[in-house]
Amino acid sequence: MELTEHLFDLPRLDYFEAGNGYSGSWEGFNYRIFNEKENLRAIVWYGPNCSDKSEVAAEQSFSIDQEGLERIHQWLEEQQKSGRL
Image 1 (cartoon, rainbow, N blue to C red):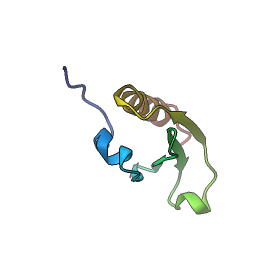
Image 2: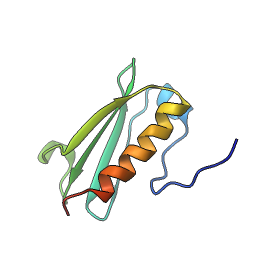
Image 3: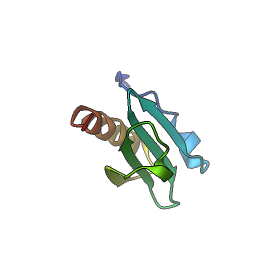
Image 4: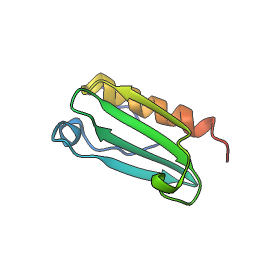
């Protein structure tokens, strides 16, 4: 399998399959991914505050499989590029 380079370094699929959530940020662009049992949900927001104190700019659900994780990478990169910073 060919490895694809991504802007965001996310955990492997088994991390999410175990029910763990993950968050990160890059230059004012913030994201969080969490397991909703049936799928992975990703949210993004902008600015210096945590998600609880910010307006969610976008959110989307993805399948809990390798394809879903790849789609999360792509979606996060699209969101970051189209951001309102």
